[in-house]
Image 1: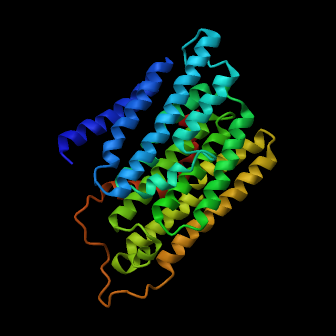
Image 2: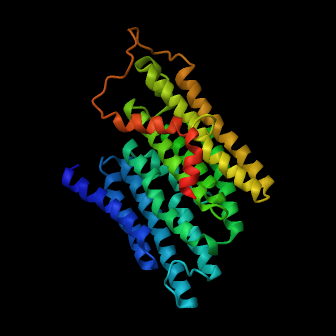
Length: 348
């Protein structure tokens, strides 16, 4: 892609998200979400592959549907209350419609069906943008309006997303689909706690972005998109294979890795709010997700592929790609747990 065009598209992505962050009026927030969608569509279709074009079409249609629902919800709210301000979403019908539209935008279950299909059709870097940056603007809107949204709806969306994210990833062999289901499960964790402690949602979102970025950049570095090709990684680069296994376990939420921190704090908050059954359900749903991360770790580090090369193992993979972002994200995905008190203090 032409670098000037790429710069304009990436700037528009940033502009759309910033506009939604800064807006207090529904139309401006809607405009920011639309700029976001229109800016990422050319990035998704840039390889002119039929699967990429199909993924772009699916993504555009779902996002356009969600944007239309947001516009309809805000118009209904303005009609009933006479207010266009984001903080005054007091009409219950508009509330529910708005939350449903945002759930469709970020891929919460049961509005998640587009997510694995779309991510499967994209290259790894565009998939990374879709899984991380594109979640920021809708989450900003959910945090601004959460006091008006029905708590039961948020709880149902959260529990269903963690369960679907766990069950859906069990049977997959494509790594991008596994990461899509991982994303759905993580979104569930963020939504379940948003009504009690929004700062924990922000911490969970930050750690999710760090861990997912590390996972996508690792797969890009080793040029891997399937479990079967993942098995040859250790013979090409043992160091990369071992750090990837740890990043995957961090995504699963195992201590002493970074991914344990948000899950631990969210479970603690749910217990404080006298919701032990919901906390137990979330913990059990996390175990389902952990199974497919362990499956990837097993395939990557504990099995010998039938087509290994009979040559001396290099200590690192030979590549022309920039590896600094991968190193930074991997370090953050593995070692931020001791910083928990500091992060909590900064968030509150």
